[in-house]
Length: 79
Image 1 (cartoon, rainbow, N blue to C red):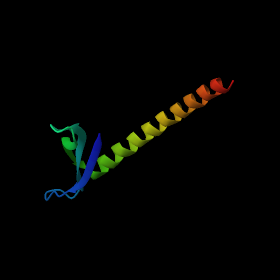
Image 2 (cartoon, rainbow, N blue to C red; image 1 turned 45 degrees about the vertical axis):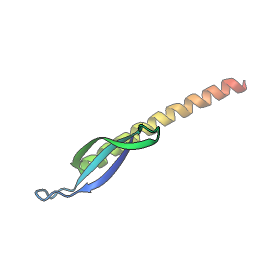
Image 3 (cartoon, rainbow, N blue to C red; image 1 turned 180 degrees about the vertical axis):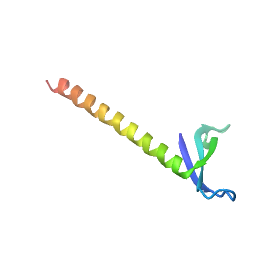
């Protein structure tokens, strides 16, 4: 699922806001791929940055686990 991120203008607040549109690819009646918006959210920029950094840290930890597993499996294969 892809995301489209854009600054959201808000007059009553000094904090910058962002609108995040979550999209997905579907097939239309002709069988062609089309991108449609699944849902959207508006949140403070600082909160969005914090969530993205936390997500990045989790993905890096998962990648390290997979790399370790792959190394172990290749060691067994080569033995």
